Length: 75
Image 1 (tube, rainbow, N blue to C red):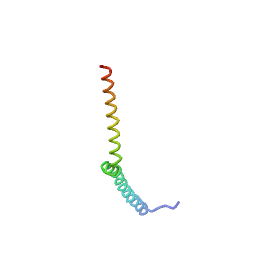
Image 2: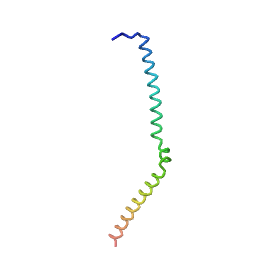
Image 3: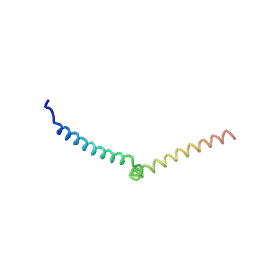
Image 4: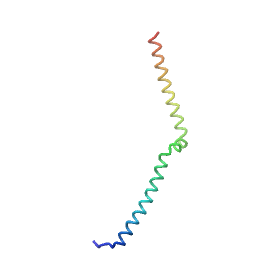
């Protein structure tokens, strides 16, 4: 394997450092986009509203059922 000169090694290190910097910036952008919950809410507004309505219906029905059971036990 041929020996590399100090200048070639420095150039290789600098090229790797520059490429790593670009990769890091790209990764930061992707992380920021993926963790932006407000954008996800806006983009999926219909699904969020349907999910909230279903959850409210299930929770409300469960509470009503528990209330009915309590009334029956007292009566």
